Length: 329
Ligand code: ADP
Ligand code: MG
Image (cartoon, protein in one colour):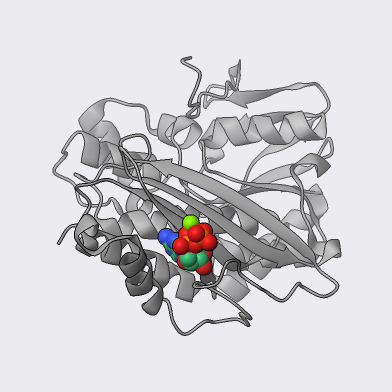
C-alpha cells in the first residue's frame, strides 16, 4: 500500500502507535504541537542532528528499511556517546516519495524502535513531508553531567590515542554490497552498534582528555582532534585494529587493508586520548566491565599536523580523506 493512499495523518498515527510505551518520562509526545519533556536536573543537555539522503547515505536496493531506520538513529546515538553522554529523546523528520509504501515506513520505524529500545531512547516527535527522494533527519537529545562532558579539544602533547573495537568493517561491508561480492559480513555497515556504555565508562573515569566518534574514517577524526586541541598526532599504522572482513574484501578489490580504516566511514567506534600513565587502567577496566577491546594506536604531539608511520618506519602526512559532501580530493 502506498503512503499516499492513507495520507500523512494516518501514517503518523500508525507509526506513533508502534513507538509505545515510552522508556522515559514524556509529558507530551507525538500528537501535540510540541513535545514537553523533563529537563535534566544538574546535567547538561547535549543535542545532535544528522540527515540521511537516499542514494547519498543509503540505497534501498542494498539496505532494508529496517536497517536504514536502525542506522539513522545509530549515527546520532554515536554522537551523544562521543560527548560522554546518554541519549534520551529523538525527533524524526522524514521525506517520503510518492512511491514509498506504508510497509517501508513501518519497517523503517521498526528498525528505529529496535535500537531506540536498546538505548532507552524515546521518539517523541518529528515531521512528515513528501519529497523527490527519501530524506531522514533525526535530532537526538541526550544528557551528561558537567564533569563528564568530553570535548574534541582537550588532547595534550604526549597523550596516547586509543580506539574502541576494530575499524574498517563498515567500509568493507559497504564494498561487499556495492561490488556485489560473494561475502556475508555487512553487519557493521548496515547495523552499527554505537558505543554508549564505553563512552560513559571513559567519561566517568576522569582520565579521558578528548573524544570523537569515528564516522568519517580514522584519518579525518584524528585531524579533527588535532585541529580542536591545537596539537599534532603520530599514528602507528600497524597498531590500528582492523575488522576481520577487511582482509577478505581487500583481497577481492585490491584496496589496501588499512585504507578501509583510515578513509572509510561509519565505523561508529570511539577515538579518545588520555595521559600515557592511565591507558593500561582504562584498557583493563573496559575489558572487565564491558568486554570491549581498547587499542593504543598513536600519540599526540606538539608539532601541528598529523602523521602516520608505516611498518617500515617511514612517516607520511595523515591526510583526511574521509567522506566530504562538497569536496573532491
Ligand atoms: P504540526 O502541523 O503542528 O507540525 P504535524 O501534523 O506535523 O503537526 O505532527 C503531529 C504530531 O506528530 C507532532 O507531535 C509531531 O511531532 C509528530 N510527528 C510528525 N511526523 C512525525 C514522524 N515522522 N515521526 C514521529 N513523529 C512525527
Ligand atoms: Mg508538521
